[in-house]
Amino acid sequence: MISVIVTAYNRKRFLPYALSSIIKQTLNSSEYEVIVVKNFVDETSDAIIRRHGFREILCENPNQGIGIYYALALKECKGDIICPLDDDDIFHPKKLEQIKWFFSNIKGLGYVRNSISTFNGHEPMIDATPRNDNFKDVLIRNIRSSNVSQTLLFPFNNSSIAIKKDVLTEYYDFLSKIETAIDIFMFYAAYMADCSVLFTSKILTYYRIHESNTSQQYDTNQSDFLAKRLGLYRHRVNDWKIIKELCHNTRWEYEADRTILEHELAVDLLEGKSRKNITRSLYRYMLKEFIGIGVDRAQAVYHLKKFIEPSSWVYRGALGLVAPKKIGGIIFRRAWNTIQKNQVAVKK
Image (cartoon, rainbow, N blue to C red; front, side, top):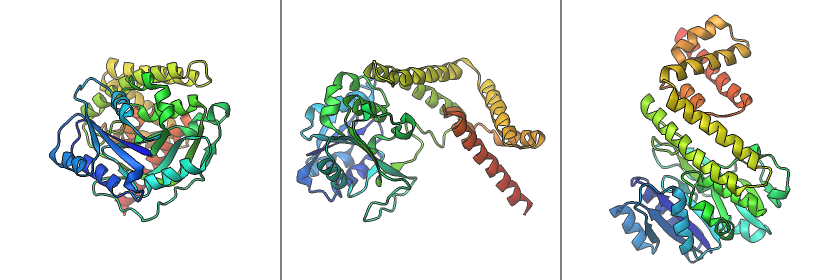
């Protein structure tokens, strides 16, 4: 049996859509159960939960992280496969049917991450058959024993993951301490369990982009953006320390340690420096990147003064990004291309 764990913290408006996507599953309802963990009462969602026999756990302590939501649900789960669903995301109608097939047909499988499609505003158009993303499926046998690159497999989005229950129960004490990074934790739990993992190109999850995404903040002013980003980094420092402890004496303990340092530096930056200093540092970094790809300095300076507004996606993306230089370069080349296109459009 599959246990779908739906989590919702403070947000009421999206939950009915998430629950509706479960009701529409092609897998027979006798083959899965639904446990909803939330910290509010909502007439619309509660009616759906009662009507379809879903179970509900009310978790009202605002100081508890998302990990305790999963820890509470895990104690109630009857299934041997866990499928998380965030309140603002949506499952493809064949998600659970496909997940069942993977675990039934791939020996030793303990973890699956499927592809996602993003949407904003209206509910997405969903094909009857799941579309494939533009990569080949990756199946890794006994991941801890392999030499696979962490960069290739870096997890994102709870709702695109399915994991064996016994993998999570093995690390229950760690799970309950996680504040936000459940997706990252589940991957490392699978790594420590040394099970087989599958990254499938099938798009089985729809990820909603909106102003209150935990890791992606949109449509907010500069002050709110910086405050949210600071809060995210503080949570991640806590979560990566737990993951470091989880991965003790493995080759990825070092990676966790490095990530903790990066996030601590980001917290120091956002806490200890004025926005003016942050903007100035970002300006210098972007200028260096533009000159590095052959852009004339005077022309780069002229456009940067216009382009590096605190509300722009370049400013926010660069500030929020802790990434290798190669990825940073891609972002800034894209920014420069956008400037050039806008300049051509104005001339016409």
